[in-house]
Structures are given as structure tokens and as C-alpha cells.
Amino acid sequence: IPYGVDLELFQPTPLPDDHRILIVSRLIKRRGIRYAIDALQTVREQFPDAKLDLVGDGPQRENLRSRAEEKRVLDAVTFHGNVGPQDLVERYRSATVYCHLSNDDGWNQTALEAMASARPVVAVDAPHNSMVADGETGMLVPSADSEALATALSELFEADRLAKRLGKQGRERAESHNNWARIATRYAG
Image (tube, rainbow, N blue to C red; front, side, top):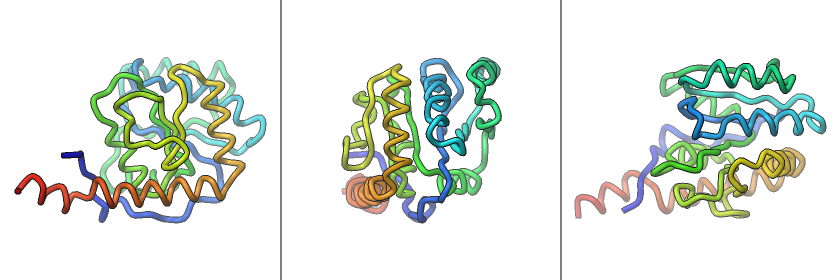
């Protein structure tokens, strides 16, 4: 029985006009967030308004801040810390694309929340990201590869129709495979 997502809380909304990347994660080394900061430097060459929103906290916060400063993108990175449910929903709504760069997790619930919010997902090609179908609900990139990540992000920012299509298909997949009501019935049965 698959994991579920609250489709009432995480609703699809139109993609914003700006170029915002969202990561919801504990700020720990194995989550690969530094690669998003590295990729942001490259992405901003083509999309100077690109921003990275980090939701969550952890022991890597200062290291990530230093990395952003070193890469000259600190002005484009916002550390939101831990937020409540409504703030989290707003972060998904303001995002153009969602990233999950960890290559060592049990399940990727945040990618499922992004898909329910009709956001394309860029994730590391790893088993815990099985809900992300490459080219259908998002894009898969190799682990620890900031260049491939920058390419995927730039492609989604440039091809608005592609981003919208992947987001729409992600929502459809969340509805058909991860709807809490259907999953609860399977558990009860």
C-alpha cells in the first residue's frame, strides 16, 4: 500500500511568473542541498531572478549559508526555517519547481506534496524517488551533479509548457496513486 498525501491541503495552483526553486528538508549533509546552491549560480546566468527557498532547519544551515555566499548567490537564497502547515502550502504555491536531492531516504513525502500542488519535481535518480517518473511527473538527475541539476532547472524555467505539463501529470498521479481516502480504504480492507 503506497503512502498518501492530503489532496485537500495541497491543491494545484498556477505556476508563478518568477523562477523559484523550493526544497523542504532537514538541513543535513546527506540531503544534497549544496548542489542546489551550486546549480543556482549557473541557473542565474540565464535567469537572473532565480531564487532558492529552503524550508527546514538543521546542523548544515551555516555551512549552506557560507556556500551560498561563496557562490555569490546568498541574496537569492532564503532560509525559512521550520514552518507550519499553512506556510508550507504557501511555499509550494510560490514555487516554480521542487527539488529533492537526497540519495539516501526511505520515502520522499515532500515530492509527493509538491506533485499534489502541481509542481514539477527534480529529484535524484534513486529508489525513494519512485513517484517521480522522468519526463512524466518531473525530471531525474544523477546524484551530486550540480551541472545536470542546473540543466534540468533551466529547461523547466525556459519551457513553461513542459513545467506545467509535468506539474499537471504529477497532480494526476497523486490523485490516482496517493489519495488518502483510497489508501485508507485499502488499509481498512
